Amino acid sequence: MGSHHSSRYGNSHEANGWGIDMSRLISLLLLISFAFGDVPDDLFSQANDAMIYEKYEDAIQTYESILELGHENADLYYNLGNAYYRLHYIGQGIWAYSNALKLSPRETDFHHNIAVAEARRIDRIDMPEPFFLLQAYRDIKSNFTLREWIVLGSLVLLFQAMWVFGLQFGWLRGHMSQSILTGLIVLTLGIHGIAVDKYFQEKRTHTGVVIANGVDAYSGPFYGENTVLFRINEGSLADIHQSQKDWVEIILIDGKKGWIPAESIRALK
View 1 (cartoon, rainbow, N blue to C red):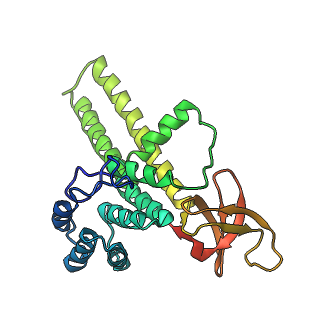
View 2 (cartoon, rainbow, N blue to C red):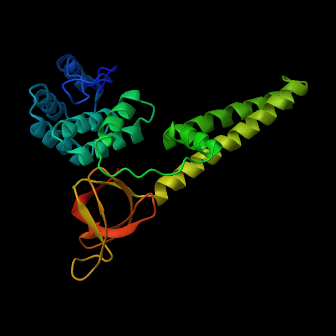
View 3 (cartoon, helix red, strand yellow):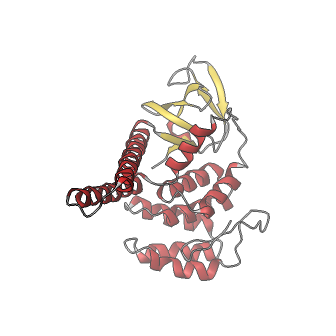
């Protein structure tokens, strides 16, 4: 798994049978701490040192402690995912990579690493391909974070206001200027529409990653006489519908619904 930034490691070349290239690990990890600012330098340095010496359990504990302190960063999740992946914790690795992608959705390294990890999943639910325009819309929407869509919409709205100002005072004239204004209005509405859609999507969905293998999903939130409906394996994604004590009800992308122990799934940030 790969690296083109000083703040992460691993690249798209397969190496050591893992799909992660460690050849540049030491130099990159020495540089990474300078990109973190708010993250406690001593903890991050400890985690980096642990990765350098392949003490992945120690690295995981330290990276997780940084998260517990309330700090998060796409590169931190990415490195944590690499550490989990090397110890065969596929579910935890996918969880970390998914969080990295949520914070930085255009990073090719993140997409590569999560694809490598997902290829090791046992459960593979293949859904029909959506209509190409719908897929194109989803791809565009997922290519930016909610904050980026809001900022982009604000900038376009500001430019639109300046254009209207120019038309009102006669600095801009002609049919072309009016056509450009129409285009700006459509673009503004489109961007803000995507931002609203993404906001409600993030608000209404609560996705988790299964971090235990061979988890039975039951018809109710306790063992007892409840029926086992299906089995789900490590690394699978599921929407967390509701929780009850030590159980959560999940819904898979194919519509299957059941209750699993809360400790067997980790909610995305």
